[in-house]
Amino acid sequence: MKETYGVKLPGLALHDLVGKLIVIEGTDGVGRSTQMHLLKEWLEQQGRAVLDTGLSRSGLVGKSIRRAKEGHTLGRLTLTLFYATDFADRLENEIVPALRAGFVVLTDRYIYSLMARAMVRGLDPAWVRNIHRFALKPDAVFYLRIGVDDLIPRAVFMRGFDYWESGMDLYSTEDMYESFGKYQGALLQQFDRLAEEFNFDVIDARPEPKVIFEQLREGILRVLVRPEPAAAPALAIVPPAAPSVASGLAGEASGEGAAPASRRAPEVVAKAEELREPRAKI
Amino acid sequence: MKRYGEHRIPGRLFVVEGIDGSGKSTQLTLLHQWLKAEGYGVVFSEWNSSPVVKDTTKRGKKKQLLTPATFSLIHATDFADRTERNIIPLLKAGAVVLCDRYIYTAFARDVSRGMDPGWIRELYAFAVKPTVAFYFRVPLEVAMKRISDARNGFKFYEAGMDLGLSPDPDESFRLFQGRILEEYEKMVPEFALTVIDATLPIEVQQQQMRQLVLSKLIQARQLRVAP
Image (cartoon, rainbow over all chains, first blue to last red; front, top):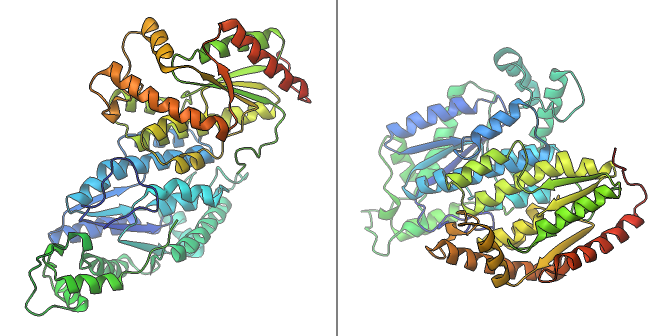
């Protein structure tokens, strides 16, 4: 069964969320959107319904955040809470309903990016963690990791320097290049800490997109064959020879759809549960 | 990040709290007039008034897009913006700041909507602790009578209609305000709220307020004088 990081929202039932929540994390310009696009296409080819979502895309406040950021008028507390509101709206109105309907929810960034940004801006880590405690624990977090030295050329030659991605609200400098390096470096430090605390799957984001995509695919397949224990009925149809989790994985990789969670034998469920790594608490 | 009670700033912050119909806004207006006449640099900061956030809140309420969680968070966002850009700078400058509703309103409402009491208190931990927080205590029936005389009909969220307590707005309002009242009572000892008996004559309540406010202003080292 899905659970939150400790705070339950009123009226938000979690017992019937049969879908999978998969997070792609990483700093600005690391190639997350490219991967999101490839993954969605691939999952749909596999016959999986996919919801893709990302920061500041909520119907409630998405537009307001983007507008406020254009004017560079947001303080660090306000920015953090604005994003938390956006996240809550998407959690309740997009993510949870999609998980209930059995979708694979792919999200471009999650609370970890929000926490990293807030902490780089000097906000109290305990306060920042508390705010996000209503978030669902994802089934997996893939962290596309890159060093600042590899990130800078991408910014220079592909994207240009953005005001917020350079942390210009943080440092009193006119020099966007200098500020970018400093800010992204600080963000990466926070990410590395979070990666350990929340047990991210770390993926080296330096190779070309195809290589990264392969690794993500493999990782996601592992998640997809992991059944939801709550969904396993008492009267499960036992497959001819109860497959190990590994062979289930192989089947999926060769193009066969994984058996839905409801058709898995209880002992397989138990085994898969053991493999599931414990997640840190906020 | 400074937490509640950790700010050391020269200004003074007075806030009023209470359910709708308790008369708190009337009392704050009278206090405001008096402070101005006395020559203090005094500024009013209203609940729900941040220029970057308030349109979103308004739209969310009008279209009924808000859940207890987003209701809570959007108000916290508004409050954060006012704290960062308004309340703290003003207090640093030595102003007297008056707030009609403060974090205790959020605690009372959001907990009544089912939000976690510990979570919501920590959410607002960045708030400046008021010099005095006045709580206008009034029985539910008295407040209801004052409101029904002055208004026709309640708004959706104001009456707690999102909670499905009753299909009748009047009844829903009564039930919701009843819950809020209970939350306020719990907060009186928790946050050392200064209780004013809101059934007393208006002048008597105002006199009590001014007396306490004055004693806090005398202690202040440097307060801004109105231009």
